[in-house]
Amino acid sequence: MCGIAGILFKQQAGPLGQLLIKMLADLNRRGPDSTGLALYSDLPTGNLVISVKIEEEAQKETLDWQELITRTAQEFGRVRESSRVGYYVRLVMDYEDSLEELTAAIESSGPGVEVFSMGEHLEIIKQMGGAKALDATYGISSFRGTHGISHTRLATESRVDISHSHPFWARPFSDIAVVHNGHITNYHKLRRRLETKGHRFNTENDSEVIAVYIADMMQQGATLEEAVRDTITALDGTFTYLVATADSIGFARDQFATKPLIITETDEFVALASEETALRKAFPFELETREAGAREVRTWHLRREGSTKAKIKAPSASVV
Image 1 (cartoon, rainbow, N blue to C red):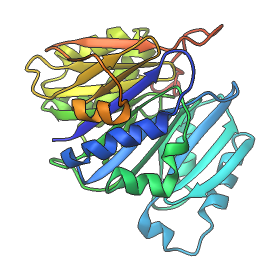
Image 2 (image 1 turned 180 degrees about the horizontal axis):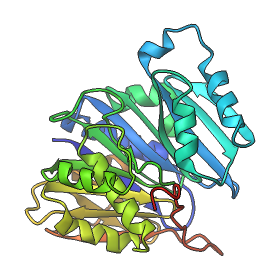
Image 3 (image 1 turned 45 degrees about the vertical axis):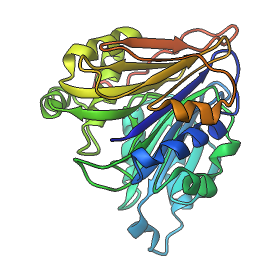
């Protein structure tokens, strides 16, 4: 049993971090092992945001990880911003080439270095423990953004550590992340199929395959809704998941409808959570809610004035 939650503001950025933390704090009883968020915001066009995690054992070494990672990234492009808080080094840089190559270079900076996300809008933060502890460390409540998805984990299959916690970035595709409640029973078959196409997986968590599968379909030309709808038959098992891209959010629920998802929507926003109580903690006013149906798929898109739909960048020639 895990908890998932997401919000999309349809027209402009809002208090995304504050609202998601409120929902996650309520959902932590469904998953006390770890808490994580994929947060999306508007940055100047052309900037790439990189979230890099330094393992606890690696932090014991007398190395300036921020300087080392920044120096590595500067070999690929101009680093506009560099900061470190807790386990994370955050970079904002000018870069438009292979994300796969840049990811590999940064992770080769030293043992225990792992890229958690890359994108023009996305940054992933996750930590062991509950939402309030994560917020205290990283100040998530002050984050203003357009949309985001989040997760509280009760580990059942894979390792209990930060890397195996949600959300999962669809590496090495930009700006795609997934959170999932359930179990994908044909995970190994799907993973092998995607690996033959050149994709590399970073964990043994079955949820990671959802993110890469959707990104792969979108790279081939599918819309987000088409890709998500395809997973209803492509994925075996029980699942309810949320997926986000640079300008969209969506969900799918399997044919058995065993994993809950409650939805509320207004002219200003759409919000989703595993339990209605989480929605009401974030939005303490009159809400119309409904439960997602079996095999239901929905997507919502931002209404950025003058914007065009974001495209999924090719990670490298070897993966296309």
